[in-house]
Amino acid sequence: MNTNTLYANTIKPIGDFIGALCLATLLIIPFLIIWLVLFISGTKSPIFKQDRPGKNEKIFYILKFKTMTDEKDSNGVLLSDEKRTTKLGNFLRKTSLDEIPQIINILNGDMSFVGPRPLRTRYLPYYTKEELARHIVKPGITGLAQVSGRNAINWDEKLKYDIDYLKNMTLLTDIKILFKTFIKIFNSSEINLNLENSSFDEYRQNKLNTSYKK
Image (cartoon, rainbow, N blue to C red; front, side, top):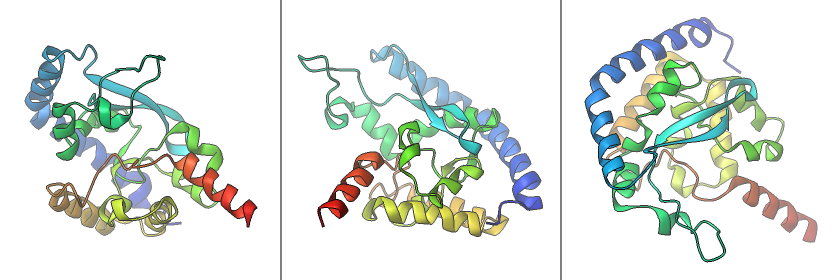
């Protein structure tokens, strides 16, 4: 792993903080506008937060603009994501504007601009020993998996990209990922920072069940 270097331990964290501070200044107006529009449209809490494992599996709360309602069925169970996603929420997701609040996560020291995406806490028991290495660094807003045809690959491949990143974590690698993210972010079929088209725990459990049957 290429995670114990001057770049990884010093230059990258400083660059993250300075970059996030600059972006926070530039995006304060868009942030307030989106927050206000969400609030006026009936979203009581425009900021969505959810627990995620960060560096060394330390739990933190990832921040996003809320893109779904809390609508439930007659049994009190939340409807599917597709049914709960609002038109505005769909736009925010496609443009990745829902990720803007994660600048706060970077300023708090919980996240980086580039790194493995922070996934659900409940996924922790389902990683292999090698895959758990994704937690030896701070999670990122974007990462190698996000710019590598992510929507067309399965979970095993996505996690392999995370490990590949750890083995090649350099300034040049981060610059390339950020550049590709900027280019591809305008093509919603190419990149989706949410990176959860399906549940990893269900995927891994189904894979184990299939192997047992064989």
